[in-house]
Amino acid sequence: MEDQAAKVAFVILSDDPARAIPGLVLAGRMKENRGVDVRLIFFGPGVRLAASGAADEHLATLRRVGVIPTACQANVVQYGLDQEIGARPIELLAAGAEIESYAREGYTVVSF
Image 1 (tube, rainbow, N blue to C red):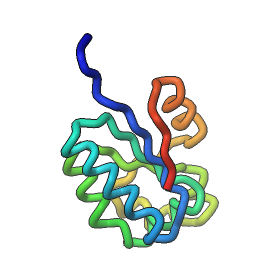
Image 2 (image 1 turned 90 degrees about the vertical axis):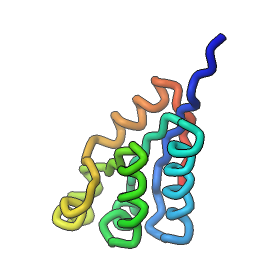
Image 3 (image 1 turned 120 degrees about the vertical axis):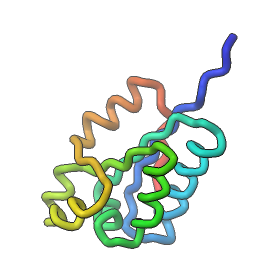
Image 4 (image 1 turned 180 degrees about the horizontal axis):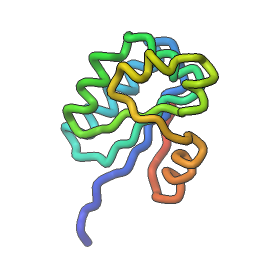
């Protein structure tokens, strides 16, 4: 039986850098060092963190190692963060459908 890469989806819920940044670091390291299939989405208050600039260095690292950061489009609108998110390398999508796909595709979902 061939080894398959683990599949882990990171849901960043917190806008507190002390709680959320470790998840961003872990996501990047799991992808870069272990070859894990990583997905990452900012949801709810986590969208505020993504827009704040506090995670910019980590967003760049994630992109460099092949993880595409995403954010809930509805939350971006809800919090009025269109311009801030638009200035960052973050793709917008429907969080409900995305998180459902994580479950359907066998990802382990972890939240920070």
